[in-house]
Image (cartoon, rainbow, N blue to C red; front, side, top):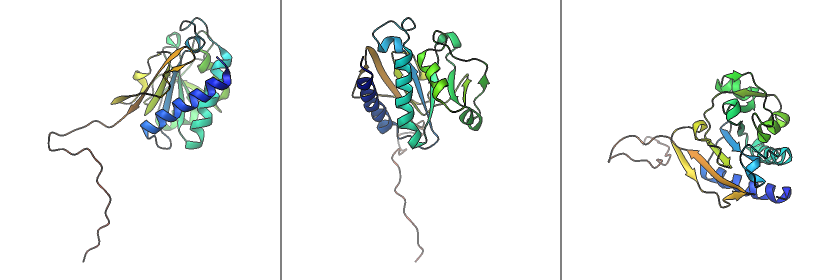
Length: 190
């Protein structure tokens, strides 16, 4: 896949997820990605460092100005631990673990995140408010309950199937409960 096309398509996909998720500053956005699948190979067999670098670059370019934190999930060989900025791990109480991702133990996007983040660390678990799964890497374990599927307008990135999740608060109450926000009204006594 041509890298500029990949970046343009990914930008549209990210915007679709952001539009659906309504993230706020300091929220966490998780990425699970198989660059092997993006280039038309089999997950874990054809990692592509250049594709990984471009994917992380594109996400950071989109998320940083919004003050949304990126977490990048590694593969099963590092127990799906995630690259985050040290500041994010410390602020959110994520437990830092001792591992540095490699091409075939973490994956190309994890390695690229470690290279492009300012002060990267690996953490074992996170709670993200939304995320993007490129190549069926299973990010649901890292997205806050209740997860809601997001259907991006572009369904594939290169050869990789694309899915996404957002989260919402749990609905509580019964048939008389209301789930729509109440309009703010200032009260002024007469």
